[in-house]
Image 1 (cartoon, helix red, strand yellow):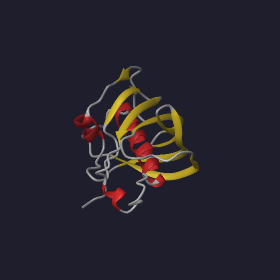
Image 2 (spheres, helix red, strand yellow):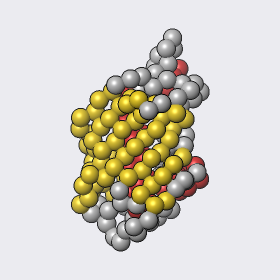
Image 3 (cartoon, one colour):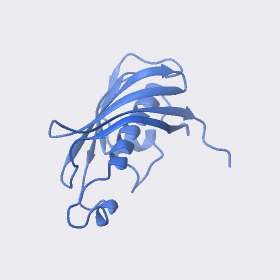
Amino acid sequence: MTGEVESTARGPMDIRRVMAALPHRYPMLLIDRVVSLALGQSIHAIKAVSVNEPFFQGHFPTRPIMPGVLIVEAMAQAAGVLAVESMNLADSGKLVYFMSIDGAKFRSPVEPGCLLDLYVEVTQNRGAICKFSGKAMVDGKLASEANFVAMITDPPAD
């Protein structure tokens, strides 16, 4: 992360603090709270998966399963909260763009009623571009994992 990073942990963070860190809103906000956050290092966030999620209407009507791409997006949003909090950028207007993904694996389905535990670690920090490793767990069982890259940038000009 660029700038000076405090060497303290933060958390828990409620939905209001998550929304201050991310520009995402329903239905694309996929983080409900942060359990713990070690600035510049790691985050544990949670997504409560509800049957009322709009994607369950079509994925799949007879056996609702959270789409893998949205599980990866939830991990990327957790990384965004980690980056924004580590750099003290909440409410600054800065954006964290998901740039690439590598090695995504989906191990078990994520169904309504699950608490999706998202664990993300910084694996490389090059200023505005950071690499992350993420795992999504349900009841202690690996549901998905991926490595990804994100970039911190100013919002586009109007």
